[in-house]
Image (cartoon, rainbow over all chains, first blue to last red; front, side):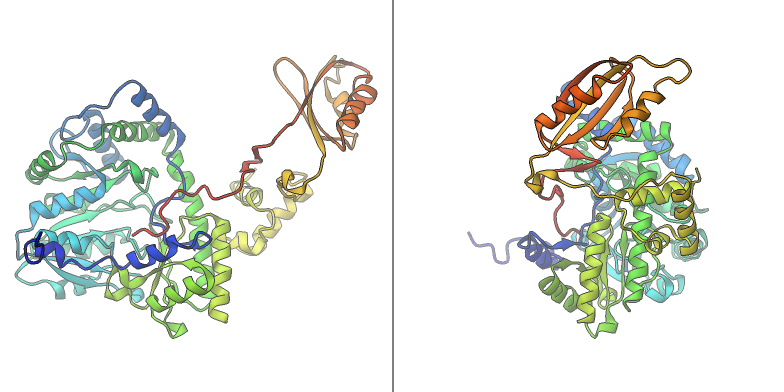
Length: 390
Length: 163
């Protein structure tokens, strides 16, 4: 079979993941401590698992409505309204997806026409750029800096915009930096978005994980709802990563298109996951989202520990107020993030993710996840301290 | 009990070696405030002891541990406290709880041998005033102690590196 020149060059030309190499190495080191895990270290709360087991036993394994179980969509709509002050019709504006990942893909497919420019933060989650490329879009990086606490600046965004700019991906709280954007920060971005009539894909998957201040949804700002697809899900807040359950909330005009693609490519999100998600929101509403609060409290302690310790050992680390990552700069060691991560792994068996896996702006940084036990974090910190000191 | 005290206790329960300085960082408080709170809890008896959780199978010793269900006749105006006080005094008694249900006191004891435990029950416990009956159950294997699984090996099922 002659593959050369016959398979899709768009896919072929997508850059391989920068973390793949590390994954392969760390996988061969069973005693390495990994601070490179991008999912919670808490299991899905037992009540959710138990409910799903019961629904499995009762045989709720059929396809659901393409848009997702109506009772789940109602809970999602109510959750978004009560938690983040954004209002969507569960019947026509909420779509249940296979993780937030599918929602991002759908949003790009429905908004981007080949040749459109999509403004993508740098550094940011590894999937945005490939997703933009897959729909024929052109990525325009919007650089973020530690000096700004990795918040997106309106003037930097403005400078990246051209007549071909169509959409902005706005992921806050942010992976890999842990940065958040407060209301005032977002309002400045909203001015630019309004001025250039951009669409916004607001990835709010870490919206429950903020420390010291509440998350503000971009769609809650005046004039932004009509142009924003809010993407979120159950992975981080409810520790339901493997359940693959997310959602897109958008005005009907956009949601109808998202639905069309979803209907033909996915049919529906996994039915048992949907039932589990319904229980997660319903029970969370009843107990004040206690499982989320407990998890957040634990993360907060770990966050403070890492920020303090990294700064003490000379790796300047701004204080992130979201997600479960810290993003210290390793330049003071004379190494870039890639070299630092590789040498640390081989000499001390501690795995971190090089910052440049998330974009060029991350070159001098490493991403450390604190979705790990306090014991693992303390051991890793001791080894990193030794590595730097040695 | 203040929220701060509860937060401190939760950390110490997980690792009692955690210093006041470290707890201060984790909770975003001043070290002096944490140290004072810990001292107050030691003073008022909230914090009774700093200890360890050990997987005793790793020690290779033949110590015997047992749970003894004890039914007693409580004393008028003293309830169960008097007999509980007497039982607490025995070194062999490691834990003692007043229980609801089919018996009154759960007594956890430890001895060097089965015979030693049996002798404790027959010569010291059963003969005590107000003890109506005892039922001894020997602990054969511990799977989880104080929230910690005793088996070795990582239970982390996550992929080692993820974006």
